[in-house]
Amino acid sequence: MCPRDLAHELYDERLLPFGVQVYCPDNGGALRLTYDLRMQAAKSLREDSTLCLLWAMLMDSYSRWRTTWDVFNETGVSYDL
Image (tube, rainbow, N blue to C red; front, side, top):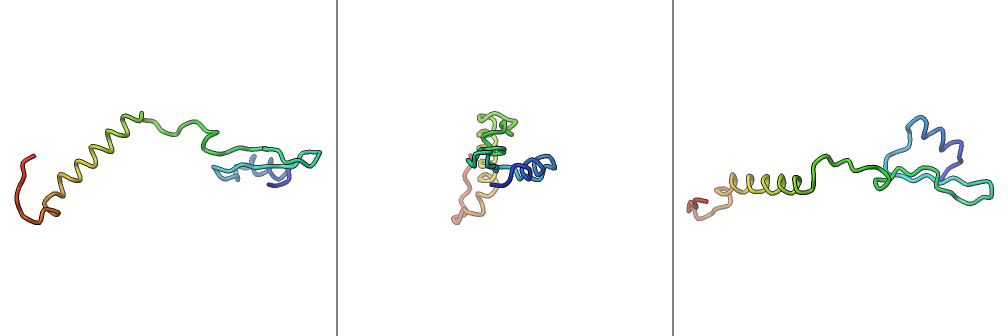
């Protein structure tokens, strides 16, 4: 919450942090939302689809498991996968 003039000045100079809402009093003294910089107000920053992201997570997990199996295998038994 801040005076309207200060809110406009901060917004024009790009000093408002991303993810905030700024409320300013109107002429009647009620608080009004002046700037909304929350994530919901912005477009998605994600470039890949959800399926693509899940696939990358799965492949990264499998790659780490496959390359570190011997470290966690106490018996020394080799398994061919």
